[in-house]
Image (cartoon, rainbow, N blue to C red; front, side, top):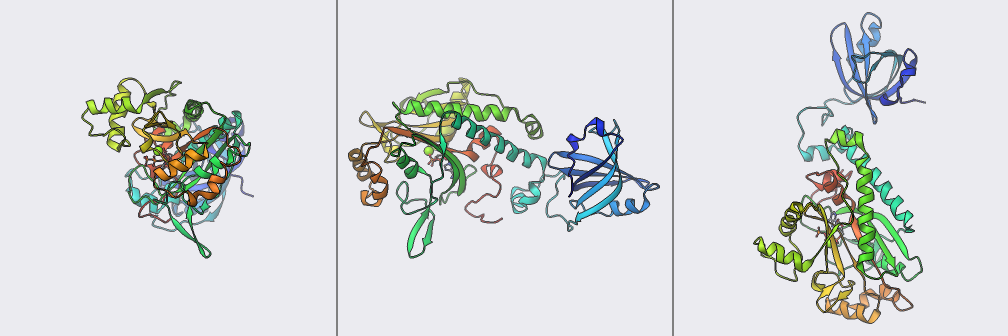
Amino acid sequence: MYRSHYSKEISPNEYNSTVTVAGWVEEIRNLGSIAFLILRDKKGTLQLTILKKKTPELFERFISLPRESVISVKGLCKENDKVRNGYEILPETCDVLSLAETPLPLGVVDKVEADFDTRLDNRIIDLRKPETQAIFKIRNTVLAAAHEYLRSQNFIEVHTPKIIASSSEGGTDMFRVRYFEKEAFLAQSPQLYKQSLMATGLDRVYEIAWYFRAEEHNTRRHLNESTAVDIEMAFINDEEDIMNILEHLVHAMWKRASECSQELEILKKVVTIPKLPFARITYDEVVKTIQQEKSPIEWGKDLSTEDERLLGEIMKTKGEDFYFITKYPLTSKPFYTMPDREKYSRGFDLECKGVEVSSGSQRIHDIALLIERLKACGLDPKDFDAYLKAFRYGMPPHGGFGFGIERFLMELLELNNIRECILFPRDRTRLSP
Ligand code: ATP
Ligand code: MG
């Protein structure tokens, strides 16, 4: 068995003893009589120092190793304060576990940044870079925080079908799949199922899963396959109960991210924890505010990307990175959204620095109203039979939200492109790797 001794875990009490380390050959510097090899694993790097005179055979093997090969080395660990991590290893034996082919399609430590497509085409190598890995380590941490927070609030984790018979919101932007002799769709959200669960007595559920959207536009903040945290909860008074969970969830995730000091240092990012509660601004106020700034927005329409950006700037001057836009017009929200006074709804978005990170609402729980709204949205209630059944035999008031994980990470780490936040992105042109 190979014991990979992480560089940072070699403690001073191991100095002057024999250790075994394993990892990827990051760099070899051959100075003639002495060579240095930088070995890397997920915790960092360490230095192997090889003296030609002392171990001539090993020296020759080391200097001819292709970069990124995987080796396991046994040797003496010696304190050396000239080396970055305070020690070096003087190898005695070396096992080559896997030789890397040359040339590498992408350098791991090259100073010149490769273009993004080359990085994504060679993602397994790109993922060896500490800065790429740091994003996924933070992703792991914030997701753990999401599970913990939601469970602490008595949510139970569920998993709903991803192959579905009818679309959540009317069939647009859905990937169609052949399901034996029928046609099916890939789920665009867990909307209809998580709502159905509210009729079961499982009154607080959450799901962290994949969703598929056949949106043609290829933007820096849309993916065709993405992941989200979704919740649904029953016996609510109004959408404020949902917003309360959402802001605490975001706060918990953001706070945990701020504790990832090593990763943030690698990424050169500072994460400032937002204060609670987040600001609330009504849709009407938003329209008024951005119209003053010359936005062409018409009342009743959803905000364009440019409108969102503009609002983000205005809110920034007020010291608000996070804010809810509340009381959207009914016409700009999906059919299941609870109406509020004639033309408004109990739908909201959570924005972070001018970008939508979540949408949610109180939902309609009255079946007659739901059927009316389906029709008003040009949908055929017959296509929603299975969903509507959940409303026929006792359905409490409820609501929830969908919160995109990559969108969140992109904002958290101020990354330029959402593709940075998912291992193997799917977009309009990319289906591989
Ligand atoms: P947008 O207006 O930004 O396209 P949306 O309103 O269509 O988003 P919702 O249906 O409200 O998206 O989905 C809930 C959340 O899921 C969004 O707030 C966002 O965080 C995330 N999300 C939606 N679509 C995508 C996508 N194509 N790629 C990545 N994340 C997405
Ligand atoms: Mg939305």
